[in-house]
Image (tube, rainbow, N blue to C red; front, side):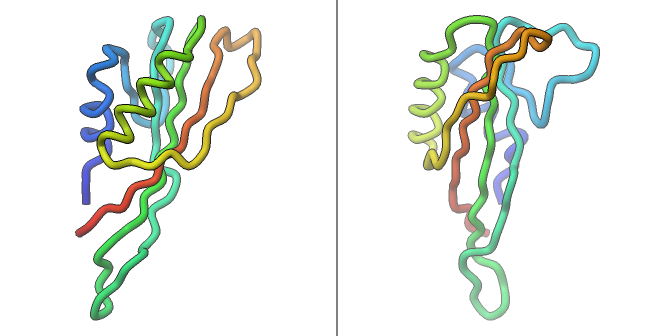
Length: 114
């Protein structure tokens, strides 16, 4: 199976933004824009002889920004699509003044062969 902790940041490297697995480290200064991601599901879709051969993996990305993030989101969709991921869901999280970031959520699925 693909190591997502290395694979996702490599895909998104052209954006030049921090790409962090499963949340920003507590106490670290946050940049104006960054991306977090995590795997929210991994389920078998094909088995042969009792062995899992193919797994559907669902990845969630959060785009965090103090300003307009439209172009970042469009670039993520293009880069992930080019890497074989299919966007399955996209929505905005409500803005909270205490957080000071806008948050766009994207979910992508892909099939990982063993």
